[in-house]
Length: 290
Image (spheres, rainbow, N blue to C red):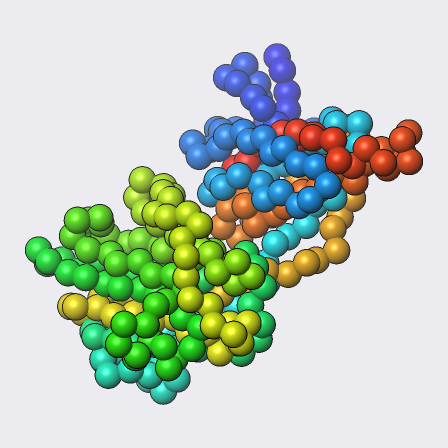
């Protein structure tokens, strides 16, 4: 009989294994949502490929020292738990609605917008908006990020990035999350949509308008043709945290808020070559649990 530590989330098992916790046998089953990943990096930070997870284990068998760090600080732009929304501008209406996460959500009709941050927005910051499509045959929900509130209401003005959810690209009565990854230094953005079938890429490296103020006082907008539930809106601020060290032949487990792409890795080189080999391509592998 083979045994495995029940608390070891990175352990790979099959039906011939039994779990052990504090020297006692435990009954358990492998969760359905799990998988493996690989990430290749060199002397610049590389994001771990996207996969929904609550934790992951990563192995360093490269012979090099590796740095790993979180990519973002998470800020809640609005969780709509209040019953009034005085910080939202625009000619549309916003009122308390059913919750998608937390206590309450918001119901939006027409154009409403709110400031995301008053600070400089670093490249690879992200804005996430969770919404539920209405149960109607025709709808348009334009969700966008702009460098200022003034541009939102200027006819013909361009957004930093925008996504129009409609009956052609989404299903009625379904919860989605649109994610905008923004790179103001090159005026580019990526747009992702998460739904029942996972994450899909809507667009990559699209041109956008990022203004001249480093996205300070940038805003998120919602322009819904029919009443639409939104909840919540999250700002993931890119931060250059100090990395943790992963020595060669080591294995580490990290928690996730939502997915394993919350982390990035870098090759720091090896002691044997005085860390001059940090430009080599190296590949790390791991295991995640959703």
